[in-house]
Amino acid sequence: MTRDQSEARAIIVLDIGKTNVKLALIDAAGNQLTERRRANTVLRDGPYPHHDTEGIWNWMLDTIRDFAATTPVRAIVPVTHGATAALVDDAGLVLPVLDYEFEPPAAQREDYIAQRPAYDTTYSPSLPAGLNLGRQLAWLAWAYPADFARTKHILMYPQYWAWRLSGVAAGEVTSLGCHTDLWQPSRQQYSQLVERMGWNPLMPPLRNAWDALGPLRPDLIERTGLPADCQVVCGIHDSNASLLRHLDAKGSHAAPPAVLSTGTWVIAALPGGPLDDLREASDMLANCSALGQPVPCIRFMGGREFGALAGTDAAPCSVADLQQIIDQDSYALPAFAEAGGPFAGRTGSVVGPALPTDAERTALATLYCVLMSDWCLTALGSAGDIVIEGSFTNNPHFAPLLAALRRGQQVTVTDDASGTTCGGWMLAHWGTAPSTRSHTAEPIALQGWPQYRERWLAQLL
Image 1 (cartoon, one colour):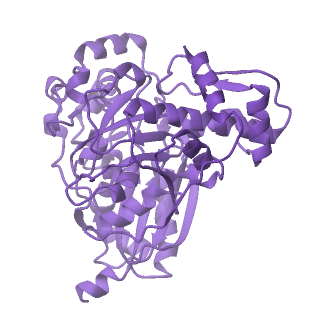
Image 2 (image 1 turned 60 degrees about the vertical axis):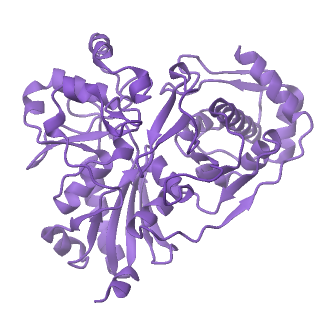
Image 3 (image 1 turned 90 degrees about the vertical axis):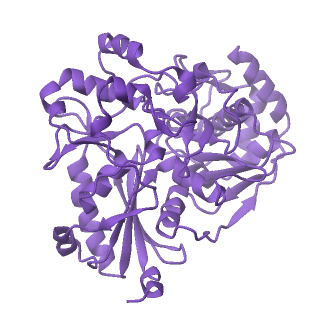
């Protein structure tokens, strides 16, 4: 088979978000042929809340077999949420994969804080629960010393799946640089915590996110029906996958857009922006791009907060519903999720007249997520173009509302409700730009909307 014939085959992206797991089959031109989803269930049996890795594994292999029966596949690319790692030996997991929303004992937290590096070396803010991956690892080593001692590799979550598929252990900077306390983005090296804890020997060789680690394991070829030359790509952290299409070959941009990657988390990133203005107290951080550069970021748990306000089965809302919320001075004040964000520690509240209809509650949730996104963009110093990716692109009011607040900044919306899928495709076709379709959001004409924002901001003081 020639190289051209190989690259004409489809790829599979394994996209593990905090809420859902998705497998997408994408052709050589970047068109999604089909996808399947399942819930990303956290199991409560065993020693602590942990991810259902075996459930995902068996579902994934069965789904891949179905995909392979429809079209030739040349590569599998894992993309996952951050703040998650797997401890493995040659036989597999030595401990279940800890859910980052689990809160280790307070006594361990005090000891860990004394060990963690300074913020201005890692740009990793001190976060609740296990959102600092270093804290998870330190707690596992403290609580389960015999199991931890069996560890051969500490694998970031995308690379855990790549290892299970290929048998090759690798490290990669986007997951290492995702508020883990393990990485120094400016120096592109491990932090002092890794040395202090004696974890250097457990960190596998660093590879590029787009590197092919090798072919699928022979037993998996038989089980899935994939071709023997199907390659497993190293993989990437999900919000960095969304960022990929906005980086040029040198990892910079002439006038870098701010990128809003939306889903369970809403992450505002400013490629090429300065690090000096990052504030730990506001949950601001420097992620690390696939090309190794630090990227100023700020985030909040927007998808979960939207669900808390609107309900899990949110009803559609109209422009009239939005106007009604503004006119009657109803406000949602942060925060409605406990897992970090610039207003972590504050209890969310709804003030103003009651909201009797589902549509009004959706309208309030939409206004809240726009105002929080606007706040985050201002905190980052965003002054240029803004690109919105991810699940909020399905909300017809989100981008126009944001555009009405960010006058002088062009707000565009991608055609891809999952920028992670596009990023995964790019890793398998490294050096090839995707055919990107987007549209410019026209500012929505709501009376009193900027003034509503000012009243909302005043209530945050």
